[in-house]
Length: 474
Image (tube, rainbow, N blue to C red; front, side):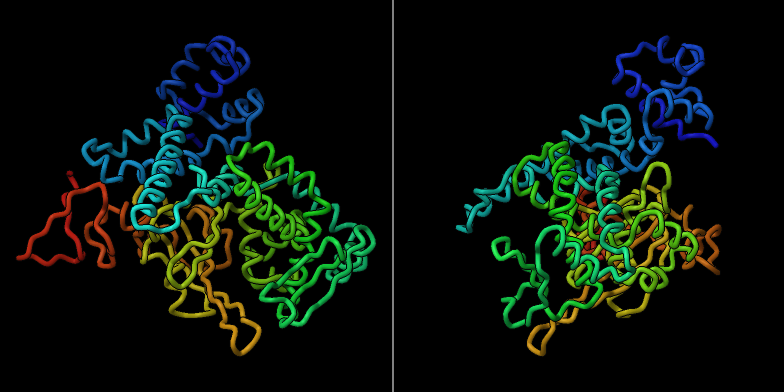
């Protein structure tokens, strides 16, 4: 087992420099010679597993930090930046992006943040020009994007929230009836009464907490799985208030809106951890080989709740399969996403129409699988299925979303859904892109837009497989 040479040398050098150590001092702690460490830092020697373990112990870092996921995420962000038409004259190549990410990840992130701020400012200027309400209350850093980065940068795992959820679960579910136990816990510990209210009295809300009356109203249209989740969510704001506050304070977010979004996200995280406690859920997932329906029945939760929870099982001492999770609507809008598997989605514009998550709408309720390969060569095993939420009455339309989860192809054998598939020959691999604006596949029959980073070539005498032809050299 050998780590990738191209990126590990720069990472080790950064670890050493962040601790203000000379090569001689670091080499002494690692038990190797300074000359050997120098060769490693310049990618002239590979790193063995034993040395990797020693690095983790000596520098006090999680070996996950030495993985490629963070670099791939940064590289994907930079590709979007340099695909901007105003930068087309610079012709920044993929290898240059990889070198920048490897050598200066903080600088790479700064470029991405600057680009996002510029986009926000440009959108405000366009709104003013068109006479539309400008984003005068919007910060340069968009709250939704900052909240998304908050979860992704922590691999969607929060140890202190897990501990708080476990304590609440132990106290509230002593008799085995979790829903009643959560309601009793709210009443006994916080003097909050739970009321199931008629839909007509809720004014469109599904959950409403009245702090003065000390009542939590849940709409009658909520199924049992959702009622339990909302009870646990309310407890998150009470039992885990301090833990959530510390996590948000440590992040140093740019705006109150970002903090509120992260607080809601962490409360949802807590609720999922109460319904599906880490150790029992991970043990059950491994036993069932990540069969989602089995886990739904065993823990009394919904399909979406199981998939979301699977994306959080990244405890350093006991990790599950790293999954990404995404929820999209029928128009292709991404309404929720988390990634622990290094799968990248475009922040601007739609995702690839060839991706199985979009195809799920063709077969509502049926689970579909796909081996997907991105342009950088990373390959994933993806699952997708639609879920439907009834509106609750004849005049309230149901909403339908597609839920997509997936893992690196190397982890696919751990999943029951890979049974019977030949994962070695990859005859059925589907080539997908991050999005049409960034994809360089010239032969895609479903391309909706030409790539931003290449010059469009229009030839009225030739019709190729794609709606757009372009010069990949420019």
